[in-house]
Image (cartoon, rainbow, N blue to C red; front, side, top):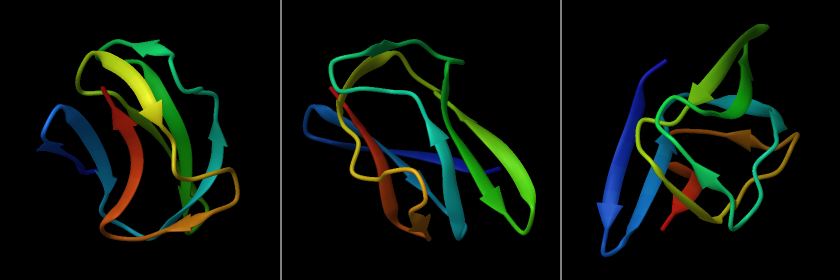
Length: 80
């Protein structure tokens, strides 16, 4: 799975590039994450992929929820 990270001002944005469905997410705003931590479980065509963090940070906002369908350009997670 291709992960892209964009930086805008002080926030890091993790962006999904393929249409998928959010199966699970265990993160909460304020939670600290480290590089390599599991962020979300995604499904596309019956194939599940675990989205892992490529950076350390603190979760500021999670604009998606379990069951949401996401496509290219959807912001999945905003980090401080």
